[in-house]
Amino acid sequence: MQVNPADILDDIISTLQTSSDTPKTVEEPKAKSIEKKQIIYSWIDENEECAMVEPSEHYTMVTSTVAIGNVSSPYEPFDIVVDLAFRQQFDLKPMEILKEQTEDKLIYRIGLMDMPSEPIGQLFTTVIPELLQRTKEQPDVKILFHCQMGISRSSSMAIAYLAQLLNQSYEEVLDNIKKRRSIVQPNEGFSKALQSYLEAIPK
Image (tube, rainbow, N blue to C red):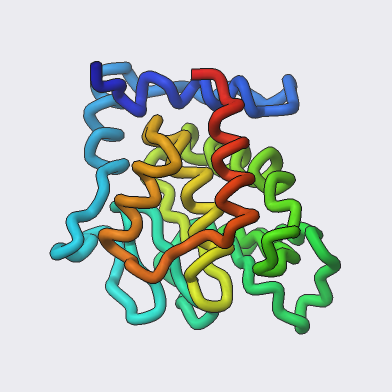
């Protein structure tokens, strides 16, 4: 039986959210909310462009609200940017998360190297729940995940997010992303961490 993503999003948030003090948001009537999310959280066919965001050679829209890109990706079209390029100018320590709130967007700058031994699982339990919470509050929020090349780090974070949002497996999400951005490939360590993390989430 096909499970609608809208029906499970609240359960995912409550399972992963560590703080019990987060204010509850007022939800739209259920029928209207589900109808809206069915449109927003759809995969984009490999031969079509996303109508919600301007196309770019530096990023690829894999769903109508989620992009994966490289270090040259423009930030303007997005509400949230997850920057995993680990550039020296931001003076980040390994696995450090720096949040920058501008007037119109939230930027995460994360000190993650593209090495199988990096503990990316820490990001799955800190950053991803925050993104899911923001999506619950603003269903049409547009998110860019980018690293240096848009291959391993950014795709790993995007998979962790989309697998829960769409209630799909690691393999399903990776396959769907590859249809739009064929170069994506989490490194071996990230792939194992993703599968372990997603298998541990209650269905």
